[in-house]
Image (cartoon, rainbow, N blue to C red; front, side, top):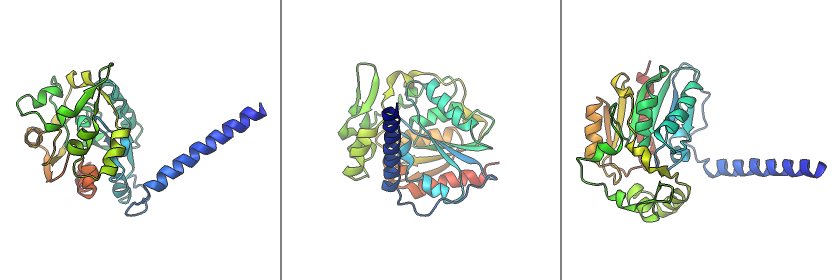
Amino acid sequence: MKTTHRFKLAAAAAVIGLSFSALNATAAAPAAPATPDTSKPSVVIVHGAFADGSDWAKVIPLLQAKGLHVVAVQNPLTSLEDDVAAAKRAIDAQPGKVVLVGHSWGGSVITEAGANDKVASLVYVAAFAPDAGQTSAELGKDYPPAPGFAHIVADASGFLSLTKEGMSKHFAQDLPASATAVMTATQGPILGKSFEQKLPVAAWKTKPSWYLAATADHMIPPALQLDMAKKIGAHLTRVNSSHVPQQSQPAKVAEVILDAVRQSK
């Protein structure tokens, strides 16, 4: 028993050590996090396909420095229902109102999860914004295929991933190779059938929305992004970036979120 106890303690110490190493590796924040201001909405961020919550590591410190409480949801990417459920758990855990942010596939997730009464506003970052009764896959049917689509591969279980070339040349072509190599390794595969699931509700019909359109996007056509932003009546900002402006131009993304926070009640 003593040997087992010592092993558990050693394992716990190793995990803690790894956690601190990870924090130190990303500690180049512009400012120390301020004490969260409970009078302001919390920010809940939903990542997209081929990513995980660390996709927002450059934006989160900028929001925290303004006194905001921020939570990055870890999507299972196993279905629309599962991802919406994960977002709803994060929303319900917040003490007050929420500004709900979604990137790419995460836009579909927040469109449904945003119907929660605690959600004050929605922020779409190069994201899908379907209507009720619509699938995410339907949104691009009237637009030329995005170049990145040719680099999506499926495994035997129907989960989709991006190839190394797809990540470096089409998902995040404005990031260095060292960054896209890590993104390729840590990407979250998504069940392909998720894109074929219809949304039962569209929260943007009743909630104020912001949309950051990436004009050099190779994954969601920029023309589609602009049309979706217009359809949902969003406050529109354009940025000349790849599909991941949260990594290539985090300050601009943070400013859009902060604008939503300032105007949310």
